[in-house]
Image 1 (cartoon, rainbow, N blue to C red):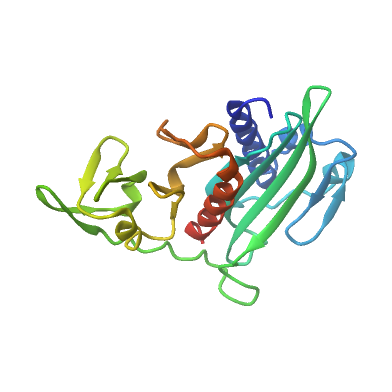
Image 2: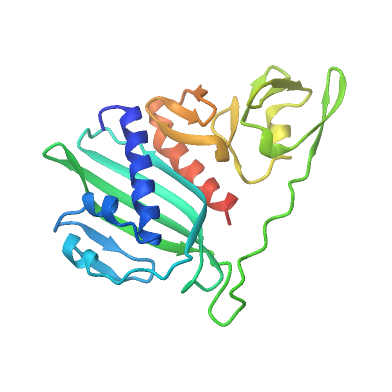
Length: 250
């Protein structure tokens, strides 16, 4: 992959193409396939090539994907790319709500990205055959944190924190539009944060729900901010953040 920006654009296209499958808008996904493409469905159905997948019957209407997140994995090969997506899937033919992950490996052939392998898998089903087909209940509202500042107490919804950084014997919370110094060590703050937070170094803990991607440019947030990551740590941080994303949308 030539640039991180290109990998993010590719991840957005893969997201659009895969979500299109569920609503029977397959044209974009088919553009990424050739006869060498291999697709492994969540039910272990295997498609060998574009023409075989194109014959697969359409889905019934009403399938819905939510809590969608797609992100590129770092690679030092300009002609290769990997995109991981996670989402909650519900609707007809789906028993309850499932947390689905798709890992897509691509190769650039004659200047065009082609899927070599796309593997769908269901993880931690929220409903099983024979149980209620109603979607899982929404999680309860997050518990607000009670944090001490120089001016007194602050009550903070952890979902609003983009990331936090260590600052001596305190730490600074970064929100979309403000910062807040609090009288806690970063490790003490981490003990109070929910599973959607990952400590990426001695100095930072990030809310994965704001992470748009991790690559050579570091951690890129949906707010436009970036945090640097040592190149030797990129793959490790990608795995940690990917795992936290999966936990957060269970």
